[in-house]
Image (cartoon, rainbow, N blue to C red):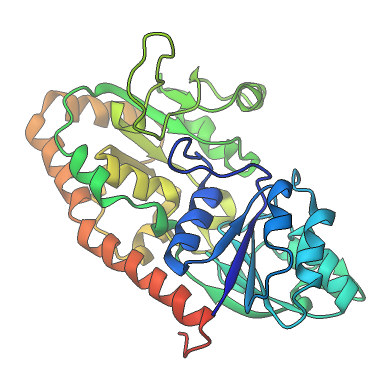
Length: 346
């Protein structure tokens, strides 16, 4: 089966020399490699694939920066291809390329998503589109744990004995307005938030108190005195798991930061409102790592910093999830293969 992945980041992907920090971009690269699929992510690449015949076309994520009109020719040249939207979030509005395609052809497409249909944002699925709702235009819905794909077994072993860590806590990622209320409870902790300058302003305006730093580095680029390398997750001893309030009652697998912390051997604390994902994920999480606010988090970090045995206990319990994560990642890759080969898919 021939497959094309159209990634919406509108940048040429180079995971060897310049790996992306954007999860959906990483996922597209990993899936393309696994499926031996073609991958385009910039309009300059359209010419090389527009006349190819594909059995499946996967449109990844829904970035507003994509030059959607230019890519529509690829879909038009593949009237018999099965169209998919691949998205690793519950809060992304529809992919504009697929919207244009379905309006033009009056045909539904299919979903590959972290969330079940019932757990996706209802207002998005109720959007009016060509006389129906978006939900009406989505035929098959395949719920798959896409977040496992970024797990790197080699990095897990590489960071297993990492003695350069500081005692600081790091939170990282873009500003999420539906996470602010929970984050405000952690203003007691003098922690780092790694994010872009634009997002730093959003956090500050929302009342979040932290030390803001540049975006984390995710590559193994060697140190160069003329081009210093920024901090990596592996440089931190602790991190914090927060989620959108929607996810408190709508299970959607563990977020990427769980897999990233496990593979970087960074101890991950969980906000207590994330109990649903812990209960249903099947992973081993030490109850000590559940916290209600910044004061409790600060006290628990002080305990672990002063008691190496206790620290080793919670870290080893986190590490014990390694085999289960690897097995789940392999399962997800097999599910994707089976799905696109039109075999029985559960």
